[in-house]
Image 1 (cartoon, rainbow over the protein chains, first blue to last red):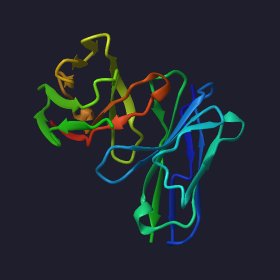
Image 2 (spheres, rainbow over the protein chains, first blue to last red):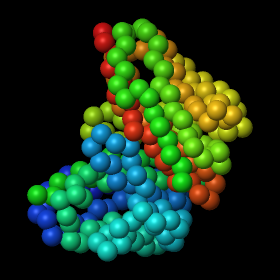
Image 3 (cartoon, rainbow over the protein chains, first blue to last red):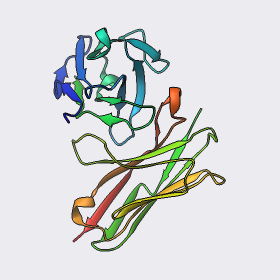
Length: 112
Length: 113
């Protein structure tokens, strides 16, 4: 079974530039999550999708972050404009039921 | 909201010894407690989990125990090997339709050969 796929794996941008991350969940998984992991810390949830619907986006900084999950499969997370403090690893996870979550390899974002 | 505390932040053991990592949670409504292993630069990997209807679960060299009354759960690794070296994260959630994982701050486990 293929795991969660993310791209790109690494991204370096200058502040104020836009950036987008892509995630393809495990086939058949209806629930998709975006997490942010700062250095030396555990992941923190940004947004959770049930199929196409964002059911929990309370932690998403909506002034600069946006996300979409068209057709209930792939998802894109966007930051515009990026700030220095956005440097982190952005992790995508998916689950088929209400418990086990499986993570992708993440996108390491560096904002200079 | 839920808060998860994890101890110790670093743990060094000799190969073959046992390692124990402990977590406490604050929300008594939490009912799902997974453990993730994360090697440097890699994805968090689910290694074991436990739901609130059981007190202990074991999978080969790893086990997890849950004390709902005290609101704490622990990861036990026996016969540690160098490849067990990684950062381990505990997490808690209410599962179901509110499956938001709240993670601990992680434990860096170093297994000395």
